Image 1: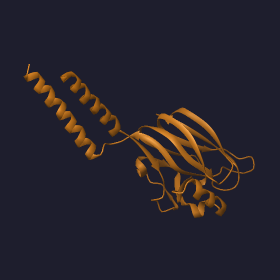
Image 2: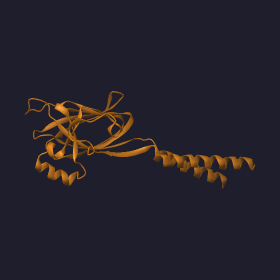
Image 3: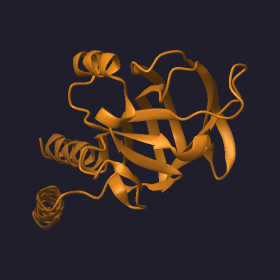
Image 4: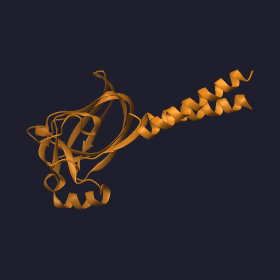
Length: 203
């Protein structure tokens, strides 16, 4: 009976630790001004390189905005790669890059090379074809990366690189447990220690 109780308590603590230190997050840019300013490092717990914010009323044509409202109703502001140059976001620890919404910032079709990196080395890679300003959700499911880099490719019908829009990024990453979770974890550890001491003293 005591053995079963101890095992159940330890199992509960393990589940608590796992749930406390992993979290899924949907990153939107709605809280940013949307006036073409750089996305600051630390936003959503990430570092940002050459991603700027823009209100969708400026970024997208009216027809695309109507379809956007149906597909991503929560998005009012997008990130975009300034000047058509490569852009990236990164973290100090590994995370899983689940998905994101991407679209053209314009009307000329383009391709974007998306790379998942770990320690500067490419561990995942895909080339996306963007053919419409209407956002499309792309699924990646890349685990064990600490950065994601977007590299626009030269278009056959354009003299230079093009900009793209990015929104609704979904990542899973280690997270600092909330105070309530830490209190519950501490209480559970204390309970296990108390039970084990009682069992030892009763022998």
